[in-house]
Amino acid sequence: MLAVVPPPVTVRVPAKVNLHLAVGDVRPDGYHDLVTIFQALSLVDEVTVAVADEPGVEVHGEGADQVPTGASNLAWRAVRLLAAHVGKDPDDPKVRVVIRKAIPVAGGMAGGSADAAATLVGLSSLWRLEISRDELAELAGKLGADVPFALYGATALGTGRGERIVPVLGRHQFHWVLAFDRRGLSTPDVFDELDRLRAEGDPPRVGAVEAVLEGLSSGDPRQLALLLGNDLQAAAVSLRPNLRRTLRAGVDAGALAGIVSGSGPTTAFLCEDGDTAVRVAAELAGAGVCRTVRVAHGPVPGARVVTTEEPKPIPPEVHA
Ligand SMILES: C[C@](O)(CO)[C@H](O)COP(=O)(O)OP(=O)(O)OC[C@H]1O[C@@H](n2ccc(N)nc2=O)[C@H](O)[C@@H]1O
Ligand SMILES: Nc1ncnc2c1ncn2[C@@H]1O[C@H](COP(=O)(O)OP(=O)(O)OP(=O)(O)O)[C@@H](O)[C@H]1O
Image (cartoon, rainbow, N blue to C red; front, side, top):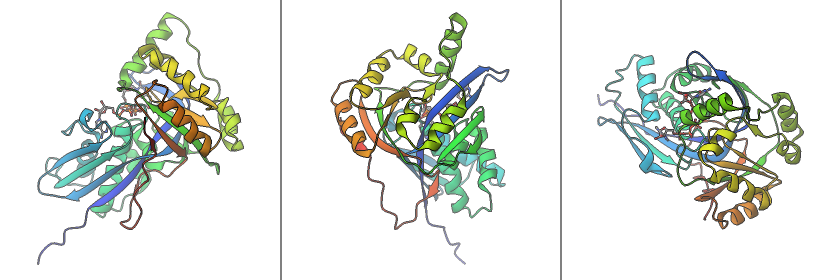
């Protein structure tokens, strides 16, 4: 009897910004303890996994030429990890992965991490695995500090390396403009730069996370705007000084506040509402301070299988 080949599975997975990112001192394992608040945004990658004799990863879209398609691709590392976890041969998983990117590569928005999380969710469906999201999160933590959050999405408090996730409930939608820089920044380099700045002097540190949680629950973007903070910002700006000008231009264009997203160099601007975000994006796109801009909102769900009849996401870009 012919084996029925299951149809390909496509997963949509969001980018993240850190509304609050407090970086502790470097640990023996080389990581830093974090206290962070993630928010998943409507800027999404799409990952399709399919049964195939020829293994491999294809990458299309935003920054595709800067993404490896071999074993170091984070999505492929997720294939091998889950295959081994369920007793399949990680060297011959009979899977093909196609990634359509919209999340800026090495942009501080956990693009690779998102693709890894999407691959775990896609394979769970393709291989009809009985595996819980928490068990997947356990595996995800092995792929990177930002991968578990990409599974859960919405808004969450991250601790440890950022892999320990506690959901933060909230009913309000926030509107963002994202400015993509000309090229990425290596996350380890930004953490190393922060250690260097802290050895030399005393760069500003963000305050307590409780205030940000209150700002979030108020649902008032004006209140939240005053509370955004990222300890990595000084390091990202030190490595990429043009970000100072980008951050200023976004607020001059009408955003309530701007911050570097994660390890950067993407800058994220919180706006009063959706219409303002479109206006800020258009003005920022013409200010010559970034490669391109996107409008997005959050919170949105984490990695989830796209059913065939679901409409394709309207690309949130505003053309520079
Ligand atoms: C900056 C953030 O995006 C904030 O959410 C994340 O902490 C980075 O998460 P990520 O890119 O998934 O990071 P990983 O791929 O796990 O680690 C990349 C490198 O970043 C540094 N790193 C990352 C996370 C962390 N808590 N401390 C660190 O020092 C380490 O040098 C690590 O080797
Ligand atoms: N599927 C993938 N998508 C994007 N980058 C990938 C992928 N697989 C491997 N990479 C590599 O991982 C590196 C980091 O990419 P990524 O987009 O995850 O950075 P990031 O968004 O800054 O991540 P984070 O915010 O978690 O630090 C890049 O140098 C890229 O070449």
